Length: 239
Image (cartoon, rainbow, N blue to C red; front, side, top):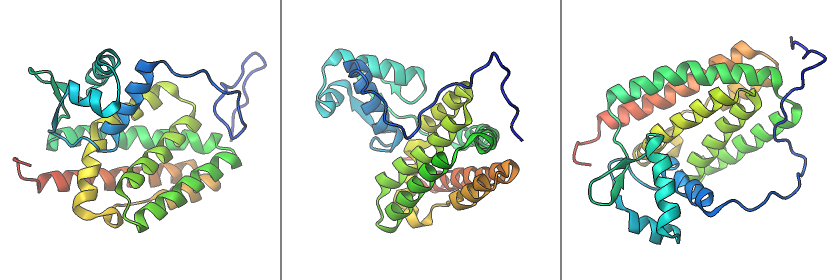
């Protein structure tokens, strides 16, 4: 049951399927940040891999200043580590790191799924279903990058629907920590070996069953993070 906002309260606006006026172009430093963030998030840079700042400038077709600014932000977010010779690298996760991430996500993602269930419109559910269908297609064709990006988009949309921006920022930041390791898992088990509880989650959300949605999300998180833990435990230290 939804509690109605008071007469003086308005529900915060969020993205819908309605076409909005064209936004102004992003500043160069923000564009480069988002491009570099995607390289980290979807495993284009491997955990432990060191890259030069100049190499990133060449790869992104950008100048040194916006790349340095993007790196500063990603280092502050814990997604990258600064090396001493004008290089940066992605941190390697260990068992303790995975345990912390699993602990955080086991509470955070189910809570956001629970909130989203009470707020989702039919259009929201249609968008989630469309993303999940595209995700299934990526799995069938063995498209690792497509799987990783669509899986992230599915979860990110749930965070948006939940209308809890502070918690959504925390949840989104956690993806930067384990996203590169998901690519490692894909490389070892293939996309078909990855868990997917999205169908159970969508069924619960369409039924308005917030508790069942939280349970399905928790299963999705635990199975996925356990795959990462097992994959990293089998990875030689020199990899």
